Every structure is written in C-alpha cells, then in structure tokens.
Amino acid sequence: MPSVELILTFKCDWHCDYCLVDTHNQPLKTFDEVVAEAESYEPYTEVTLSGGETGLMSKAKLTKIIDILKAKHCPIDLLTNGLFIKKHPELLHHFEEVLYHCVEYLGDDIQFPNLDQSKFLYILVVTNDNLKDDSILRMIDKYPHIKFVILPDTRSQRRIDFNLMNNFIKQHKDKIHERTMHEWAQDMCRTWGE
Image 1: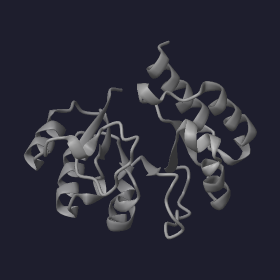
Image 2: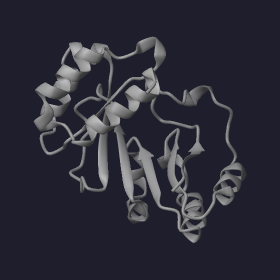
Image 3: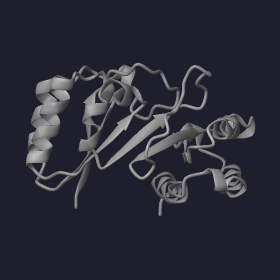
Image 4: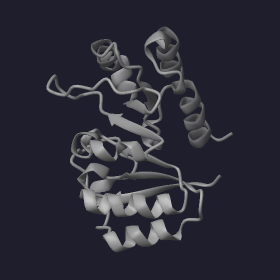
C-alpha cells in the first residue's frame, strides 16, 4: 500500500529548533491546494496528516479532508504536537494512529494525557545535547505512564552520536516504547544509507 504525508499547513505554534520541515520559512499553503492534493491520491493510500501543526486547522476544513480520504478508503494517521488532541478530540476516532510529537524542553505546565498507547504514540526527538545532559531521561522519568518513542535528530549538521543513542536505548529500554528500535533503524538507513 502506498503511503504519503499530506502537509495541511505550514503554520505552527511551536518553534522547534530541529524541525525538519522548517515550517516558519515555507510559503503559505492554500486550503484549495490541500484539497487538490487529497483528491489526487489513489484509493487505499495510507495518508499521514502533517504540518506545521494540524490542530491549527478549523474543524470544518479538517472534516472535509478526512471525508475526501475516507471516501477513497485511505487509512489516515495524524501528526500533532498535542494541539489537535486538545482542540478536536471528536475527530480522533478517524485516525489509525496518532503521532503525538512532544518536545523535551517543555515546562511543568505541560501534561501528557494518558491516552491509549496502541493508537497514540508519544514521540521525543533527541539530540546529542539532551542525551548528554539527561533532560530526555528526566522527561521519561516524569511521565512513567508513557512509553515514549525516542527518535534521533537526523539533520546532517547535527547527526546523532550512534553510541550515545544506542547506550541510552539499552539502559532505559524498560521506559521506552518498543517501536523506538524500529524507527531508529529506519532513521539510520535514511541518514547513513542502507
């Protein structure tokens, strides 16, 4: 089954320094462009709704995109920083998987809800710095009800230290979601080649 990422908007309420999309430096994307892209997909294409932040879209626009994809029998996944979950919880049943992209330096005012981890994957992006200073470990320890998927920052200028990442995963595997190793292997292939 083919899979695609549909960027709904480049607008984002966060400014993550490791953003691979570089959302704040992209041209505006019109809703008509998004609709046309969704309509162009073949039936049964697996689609991940992404951004920017998907939760910044209105419910009416999101519903239209979901309806187009559902009419084509497309399985739909969602990538969000959590805003979508807060603003549009009534739409979550449409998604096969929700990738809840968290950042490791959020303050104590942010709480990660205890959602069904068979559908919701909590993702923490790691860098050499936050592996060395233990801020990732502090985040994992702070939320013992969550098994985070740990993903490396794969930008070429900040390539993750392989040994540092491997050691962290081995030492804390009981606190880390089992998909971490699969995703880590995929990232290594994309970054370093097969």
